Length: 259
Image 1 (tube, rainbow, N blue to C red):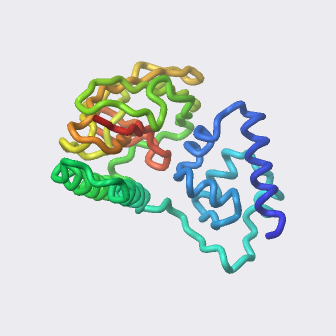
Image 2 (cartoon, one colour):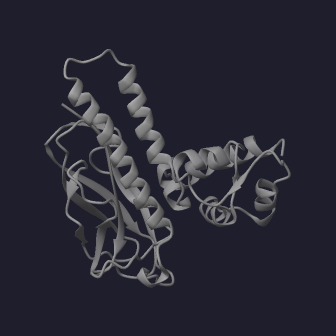
């Protein structure tokens, strides 16, 4: 395993240049979290069978490269096939810890309310993540040679700070990289609705998109009335809400909300 870390990272860097894509697009194709992807690339964690298959496809690995990169013989590394389900809880607790380390504010009641709201939001996100991972097969609408590729964020990059109770429009650009015309498709909100989260429509239509074409999809949303962080996840479905790409990572918006 001594050559595993550097070689796989070099391969990832090479693919990014050759395919002219960003790391975010590559991680989107591998359908895993950024932290999980980086740990696998850096040799800190094993890639499970499902993730290996997606990485082989995304990185265009040969049989020899696949055997070399994923021939694990280090017992220290632990194998896992799924993302860290507590990602959002960890983020929330870090926010809570950060707030507790600040000097006491005059409005103690508001500070306590923010802490409990962040914890509540984290629990909601965790429930959403678990239900998404274990999506029943009957709600899927998978087609052979049907595929979607994330191109880029058109508006509101991840980590943007927005004011409370303000209205905004988030736009993503996707590419129809399969062989089916996208017709009658929607982006469906996976995040639960709550007055502690950003509000948005449950579903928005996607314009008709032929194979090889790109489409910009916009979501209108409003930030909550309290400061904190807000993430909304969306996936492509038909008008009944059946998923087209259950194994692909969702498109999302992730913003900070401030007074």
